Image 1 (tube, one colour):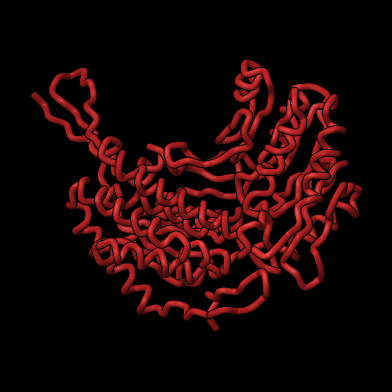
Image 2 (cartoon, rainbow, N blue to C red):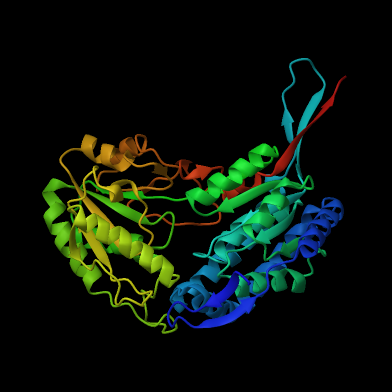
Length: 457
């Protein structure tokens, strides 16, 4: 039975199932990608840039069609789906416009005389294993820099995103990508283990859960393959002071609720100084309570369902367990109804380190709020997590923010904004949030051969 299917989480309807790839189809995909690399690596940087510009043009032209697909697949509100397509356009254009500069030869100073040059070249076939929460964006930040490097890519998407996976593959075909330069595979986990082990595959980039990252890294390690892993997060939102609590609450709502709270780098733990804690909690809970989950196809809807009923059930278990251990739900605390993928916006307080939820990632519209009595305690609470993806610091004192930013254990720190993404900004974390970076010039550096060319004179 196929594991790839579009199941509309808003209705529970199974829209369409897709067959899992056969063994010969996987072998054919790897062979095609390898053959493509052996030609694509000799293409000019200008040709690759032109390809990415054509890809961006097609994303823009098909914006409404693409947005509707992911709203159907994983319940993203339609206006947010459109924004996701727009971000992809910017990523492909960014690498098309800047790739030549990032790939330029670097001349080294040589103590013994002569010359030495570092030249960046593609490695070969790179496997991407991508998640459901941002079906286009996650792929763009993997595919764009790798294709600009001259690598070919294999894409294994989440089982609930087959329609968007095929739509992206069509875009590359229609843009004139060489046959095999971008190949989608509906593979099982067992097949993916064999793909990673194949000597023609030179690396793997995964965005997903800790469990998936550990499994992929283990297989890649046994086979001496480079990995980039973007895993979970439980990002702190540190509110040190503010002249406008309402403005801070607005940032908090956006940071926690965008994409239904289903983002690795969403604000999840809110650390608030005690002098503004009570006012913040009251207004934050009120703002979340006012958000009504709705039909994701309605342009006015801000919060749709979670990606699946299974996801909602898991979050429901986590919240109920926290409440049973003594956490207090200031608002929400449950699904809309037993058979629903919709979850009520929730604020939890009185969470202590002894509770399981304290160190868990809550993937959905649930916020934990903590009271801090000093800057030192705020930093300690912010860092007391196995994750280290993003973070944000909110204060009217920029010098204070910059000082504390140096103490935060995370790959990204945002000041006076809850976080975000842009093509030029490196994205990635530390600790159990993964290894490596995507986007920006650093995204170009992960899967390249930095080849030394030495001339003795």
